Image (cartoon, rainbow over all chains, first blue to last red):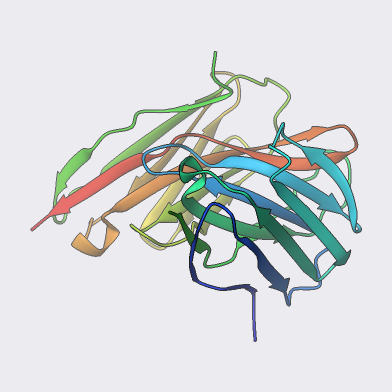
Length: 117
Length: 113
């Protein structure tokens, strides 16, 4: 496996279900991100993890619960979602060297297309 | 004021023409800028990064940066129908001890034969 992988690629779940999205990066990066992309809306940054520590939570509802057990893996646990949560969920990773940097690149996984019924 | 602004388009150009995509940003201290391409239903793909004023060329793509005017642009020469996608401008922000990208809403490019 190379780059950033995400599973599952497609997920349909009812509002009472509990499911988890998984992301794995094979780039040796130290930072991982969850984004939400709804139809015709810009990318929304949800969570940021640096060295496994959560450094940003962008006012995301508690029905989304992230977990970062190590710097290569990131999960997004989902429970009691709403239909408006249907979107493309993207994971990304980067090597964050701290401070203003000119050597930063962020790579995305293929995404999980989530449909809440 | 949005932090990163792009015209949503669609920008329609004929095959073989130059497509010009523009982006403005609000943080005068920003140092690093990126262009991503996103095909419909796919994830964003990094195609260019630029850090210094001026032009940076990579194949048919040229990124241009003007920090004094706070704008970044992407030129695509000899546009092909396969270039039809949404192009996202992103600016690197350092805040709270870590870096993150601020994305624009994207410009949809349509290249017609």
